[in-house]
Length: 635
Image (cartoon, rainbow, N blue to C red):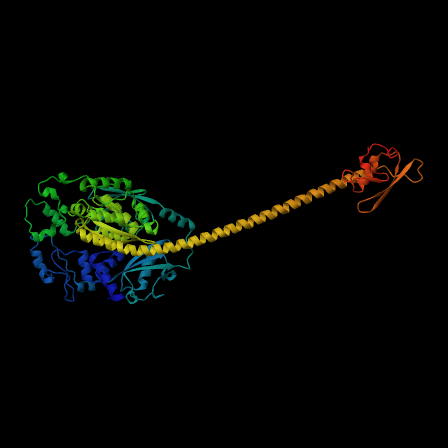
């Protein structure tokens, strides 16, 4: 394994040879080749009639090796082998080139890109920043070094820096910028640009919206997803002269606001240019079987399979499996199913009609016992394997039955470029860029593809990618292997779901018991409150009655005639009345007074005559039954 310093040197050499500026892309390509510089360069710059030779004496492939001495011979034979252009980068030459370091320096709301050789010093970076930012070196603190603060005289090579570095400038002695300037900058960054991008080869326009803070690199990556033209192979027209760096924001690139016209095409290599010039020749050359691989991409030479044999290509084409630019995925799948049935019969997998998100919902988000794997069938009409795969394998009764029992099957047609770009966008969203890149790099004759997807707790995992060059038995074995992996995961999911449901049931029972307890307590509390309220009401009534009786008593007491004196000359009756408690009430009454006065006297003492009886002793009789309007003398 190469050390970190060796890998940095390999990365720098690889970028210098290939011109790939994106460090993430360069590291990915090197890791795919186990950090073998020569193999990685061969992978990026294919050698059709030669190999690269490392300085260690090993070869990266089979075939004649081209060295400096043989270059003249190769150039001499160019008329007979113009399609082959061996590239022989010398490692010694690469190592003599100065190592360039890229620095992105942030200062408040600005980014400054600085490119220097590793033989320069930190002070030289500050001098460049002084010209760019108009900040004196003495007022500038350059931070972000991994080794801590460094001196201005420090040579960059001694810091062992990677190719791309991020630094920031602090100016504690300078006042902050005004808020109005920062607000204007923020407003410009929030502007939306409409980029009208024309794909030159297919003559198609794309209307893309980007914020002013987006970079030119982000635009090119998005166009890559739409056109499948890698960033390094994109040839652009329409960028303003000021747009010299892909890391530049759109608002700083000088674009026409709000709309800007751009054109993109695929950059032709010298070998392709020679091939295009050879297409103009009218001579017909016979090709042997051993050269068949050189013509796998025959459409690139402007020759269709049907036209090669004198048959009009339109006569060979069938109705498309799926409409181009279909707005509704469900409608597209309906046409796909109908066309598939018309071509290969009614015995075929049951394709899920709906969006890919709906297929995920159906396959992965039900109960664990009801979940299934998701099989995505990617069709391509231009592949020579399509008819054989569909008719003999995909429509085999055993495959159809097994898919129906264990899979939710969803399909998509990759023939049209727009549909292909749409699926790659969906693939990036749901499965990640690695899977999307894998599908993007598949050649036409490797289609159809069968993707086996298993849903997990937080992500979707691609278990297998089955290409069209397979057999029924191999296809069945790979489907069964995927189901076996899925069932193992499903058992764990079922166990977790059962435990979760048991916990939830226990929680529901506890919640129900708690609710019933609360209701019982509330009923007791309400009954007690009703009882207290009733007692309070009765007490209030009693008080009111007592107050009423007291008011009546006082009224009667006040209405009584004055008690006659003993020396009164009129006849007087002196009454002595014993109460139920044994007390005696005595009072004198005029003989001419009505019996009602006696009743009022007794009532004024708390014994109303409608509640008590007034009895005489001798003769014993109920005085309350007598006429109260009669006088005492009369009764």
